[in-house]
Image 1 (cartoon, rainbow, N blue to C red):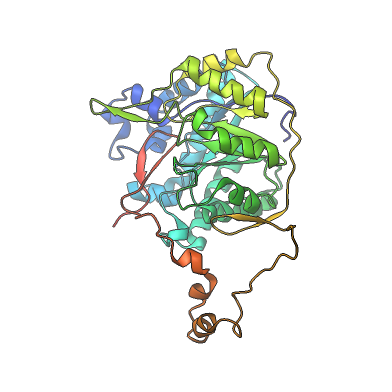
Image 2: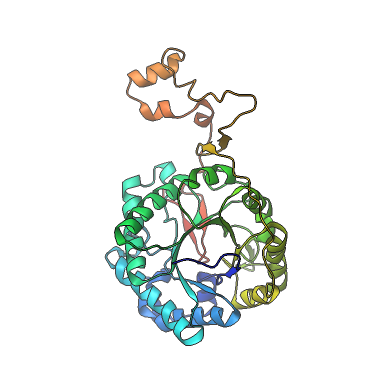
Length: 386
């Protein structure tokens, strides 16, 4: 399918944080407490009600309740054999809400990053790739209008996801737009240290529909990164932030950015920078989306004239191919004659050591069992366990 050019697309808001507000009975969770995706099977009426509240508020696109509906995450709840069933049920919930509330709205199949980081060795590329391929197959078979890989924290995870996704779409024969949405922490990079320019350089060869940011911060915290994308990224740019940076107040997680301020900050990114896809992540309620839809009524994104500069990317940074002053030297340290250390690594069979640059060897990776990721569904899941 093709999505309208020049029209602002308004996505819905947070899933998990709003499900928590609904205070569902323990019977809805059964033995799988904390697994929001299980509710597609056990409490479809609650998921449909949530979707309907966002449609009534002005959302044009519903994200399916499938953020963790892959076998890597579902295995934590003993549900890894029900990937297809859970994804199909999630799409059915969204479709039922659209049929009753707003015919013509779109369904975006939401795919999260799993709970493992391949760059830190938590999962093999093959295992992660098969998990993504299986979920893509399930969502496409269920009839989603588009796919969104969101809350992406690891550039290797993004590349694995896109390679397997486009392989599966090629096999299916369906033309489904694919969105990518990164999460940039307060440090200014993705969790493993990648900056936005490096991520864009690595993603640009793939035929994605849009690139943008979600989760982590409120709109203001994304401003500089979105400005960079709007001025350089050749496709559409999305902004789907939290309702502010979460705070713990009296033992409860609170998202401090109210609907009016949330809408005003996103509108500024639309009219000043040219962001064309908007919505809400953790803490964004139907009221946040209602105020956003009202603020954007009759508004068009600012005209963009992106200047894409072909670049090469490492895990951390990008370098433009055209250098001033030329030439652009590549791999001078990967020279067995000029580097004794590199030669010794090759002779010992330590190819991974040879691939790492001297600067990357000095980097300290985040401690996997002390870090946690904020997700679109409002939960905090550890990236790994000790």
